[in-house]
Image 1 (tube, rainbow, N blue to C red):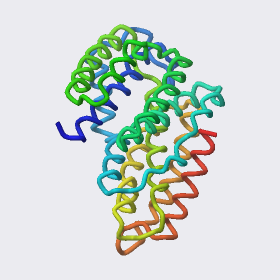
Image 2 (cartoon, rainbow, N blue to C red):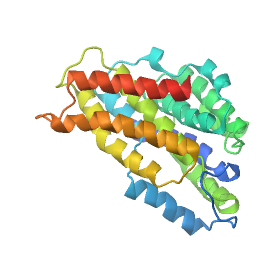
Image 3 (cartoon, one colour):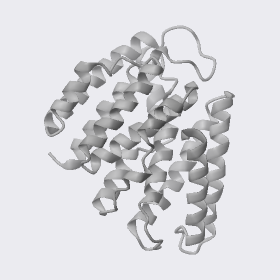
Length: 277
């Protein structure tokens, strides 16, 4: 089995663990109290994936790894920060951040770091009432099969079935926007951190450039979510970052310039510090 499938399987298992227990989470917008049918949930998740084309951090990290971009441990969100998050929004956002760090570490074969970041992800999941999918049995199955791609793939399929059943019985995944935002923001931060010296022709700059359309999709996604104050705040942050990205449209090459790179770096750090520090 190819390396890509191995790590896609691992991150599917991790994220399914998050999603499988989101039914008890607080709502973002007013929803009907009736249980949402499985086909309705599927339609909603499909809409998120197809209409807004939500970004996947794991794909970004595989691209960085394939381009032999350096691994930047110092850029990861410190595990000790987990105790700083005291609101639902910050806990959910940083669950996404830490999940993204799990993916990054796993792609680069940093197994000890991978499990360390999984542990803090589990803590935030527990704090949010998302304990299902993070029990000892689940953790042990992952640990025992880190080097067995076929087993990880099987676990991911089983986890998907369990997640679907849980969603059917408990409702929608209302924390998903926060987790998605955190995961994507961390991926951009880690892309930027992989740049030693700006080079317009480097693959890493192209990967960063490619985040522009994904950011636009993310902005549209948050615009559609309603009037929750945290959602509106995140939407404003994403919009301000998109304004910087849009400057590339004025470049003849359509590629991020050195000046623009520095602006994106500054704005990304500002937003990440706001939500993760």
